[in-house]
Image 1 (cartoon, one colour):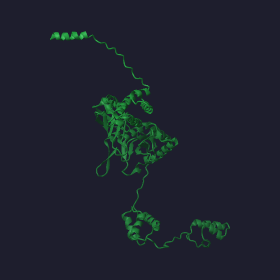
Image 2 (image 1 turned 90 degrees about the horizontal axis):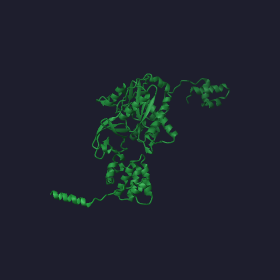
Image 3 (image 1 turned 135 degrees about the horizontal axis):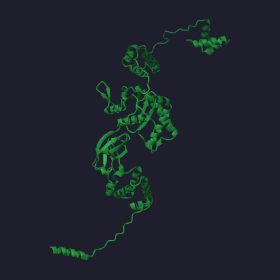
Image 4 (image 1 turned 30 degrees about the vertical axis):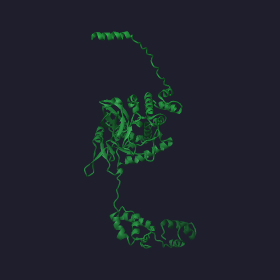
Length: 499
């Protein structure tokens, strides 16, 4: 048994207290014989054994087979090597050698293995660099009015003071999402750093040539030039080079998750409410660094007088169905625009349509659901006037389910079809939608239809209007004066006389 200095020191301390040799050895965890050797001075402090006490179980294969394999393919694991030996020499290398193999491979790599990558910590300077990245709240389900919200979070951070800003992103890592988030962050910050660093975002960088050299995209270069920033990026596959923002993701996301738990619900009434919640958590984080932020603001460059364009722009023509197709999504537009050429500005969360310089329509942006390539967003108010003139077209319209405003109206449509012939049900639904178009809250009409269907009686427009409290306009009294027939005789005689 090899003794160590702590055992020897403890044993001698006990002996100096007058404790017997047997008890002192037991307390020090050594044998009585070792205790006698210590007292006789026969214990050598630095005695190290240089010989094996048992046969090396890997002696036959280590130098001849395993070492050449490790030199050629250093990624091989000890488990893989052991399983290879078991396949090649059945019964000779049991699983009990796993720890031995792991130790031998680890020791060999420490002596002869490949050089590892070294991290070089950087000295940050105030006002020098801001960083952008996109992240997700993995494992957290956020809903808006009960519906799942598929989203990401854009994150901007100052490298020196750790000031942060986050924005909810409904689409992917697009240029519009980057530009909107960055400009919003700089506006909140009140200044511009010298550099703006990202990872290799396709929205900001494009690869040039076979050497992997990257250049700024035209739009990202214009954005950086507008703010007087220099665009830089980390090397592909080197996420740690963007570590100042990558590491901050975890801190902020943990703060957000804890705030959601404290709130007691992950459901929000609107996206705006959710964005306000995210902003509240980020600003609370910023308050912890407010002295550093105040100091770094002194080193920032001033903001330009106006924002740069942070949207995609395309031109589309309105179809005869009063729809436009934008990025594989069909949107309805007011029917007065049929045949017009529209200029569409597309942001991450909305789009606006222009004729010349006049905005004629704006609506939330829609994206195809996961696993689908197309989607639709139809506003029934855009087409209801035309549909009211030909209500029979509703029943078999390809956009029928999209014209119905929501799931409640689709359920009412199915109930109507159970009470009426499809054509009559379609006509009644069109009249109901026409009534709903006059209300800010269309659920008023939906509730009226629900009451009508739940109450015995005819299912028709007159009864629906009674449930809604709408009085039918009385027919005007028209006095029709019958002309004297003799006037027609005079007309005929005058005509005959002219012949």
